[in-house]
Image 1 (tube, helix red, strand yellow):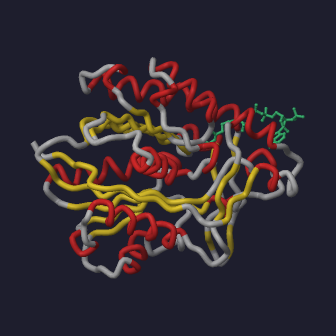
Image 2 (image 1 turned 60 degrees about the horizontal axis):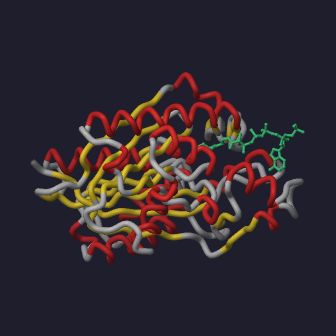
Length: 319
Ligand SMILES: CC(C)(COP(=O)(O)OP(=O)(O)OC[C@H]1O[C@@H](n2cnc3c(N)ncnc32)[C@H](O)[C@@H]1OP(=O)(O)O)[C@@H](O)C(=O)NCCC(=O)NCCS
């Protein structure tokens, strides 16, 4: 059996940190309100000249160094992003060029905050089928540019960043099992409708969210997909060493963990310092947990993400 194994991880946060106090100078909000409802205390924001591909390349270089893999040995690059540098070409192609390589397959996946789950599962399929040997899977976002900075209901929630993993073909696990789900009937509760058309942006270029509807859907969907992945893999919550959830809201993470029967002492939390970095949040949290020594080689990890679409999924793997 051929598996896709994580050979290394890396991440990048832009230098500028914006605390809840800083945001309360822009909109009518408070550290107390934001922290109590979401767990968020701060987020990082990209500099004016920084593009999503720049964040992605920083994370990718760190992951390649961690994996001790040369960029030339990568034969697949997937970037999960809802905030690409351009309408086209794909950010993955720009990342490839900035890494100084050419020739390998490179494309983006768009599943918003579930993007890293979709990208990881796609790379896993390439590796299991023999179509790729070493893949760079990146989640990178500059969500701050989709926000209406006059709208306190949304601008306090998101941040910018990137996380990356290098996956390699191996005889031992690796990714054990995964499940991806989507339901387009929920596209109206979380979206950014504007697109470039006829020389202009044809609808609102800002993120819209029905927070309560998203909250309810997220807890239900993440609890079910996590439980299903464990069941189908013949494992239980007791087999999981660490959960690395999408970092949107601490209360969603806590409710989901409770439904799954997993204690919060087994959950990697970065939402306080990162905010919701969409497709970047899971690989960012994974890298934090690995680099601070909590996640060790051989540990069983459950990764879970959900976002606009709705799209969601879970990946069970042995690190
Ligand atoms: C966004 C969220 C924190 C809002 O919390 P909530 O308890 O649902 O709050 P509501 O939207 O009902 O708003 C309650 C009040 O707080 C106010 N409010 C909203 N944002 C605020 C802010 N940043 N600061 C202060 N007050 C705020 C509202 O205006 C409202 O006031 P009103 O009652 O006077 O009209 C919560 O719904 C949530 O986390 N949802 C999930 C979001 C998410 O995870 N999205 C990403 C998925 S990938």
